[in-house]
Image (cartoon, rainbow, N blue to C red):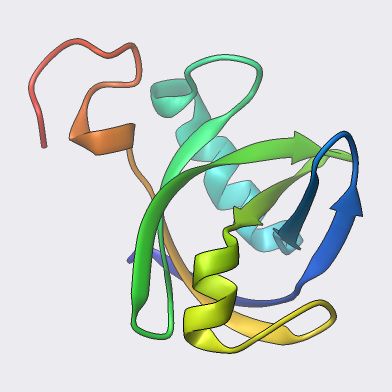
Length: 108
């Protein structure tokens, strides 16, 4: 993983409730530097994430000039954290499934 940070989990009750970690400003700078090569539309940035012993692929979404990281229910249950908890996150910007951001090209 390329970067590690701590963030406080929050729930956003939009059309479908979901939980998110806001990325700290320095991590947003790292992500922005990688975005040109990895973004695949709407500002989404594919990432590989680890919390505790759980790893998964997802995409960061832009929010309020920064980025937020969605967190699945299964991860919250497995790692035993919830709304308002501060958690350490390890993350790498990486094309989804090892594919190039546009879905073509060599795998990593």
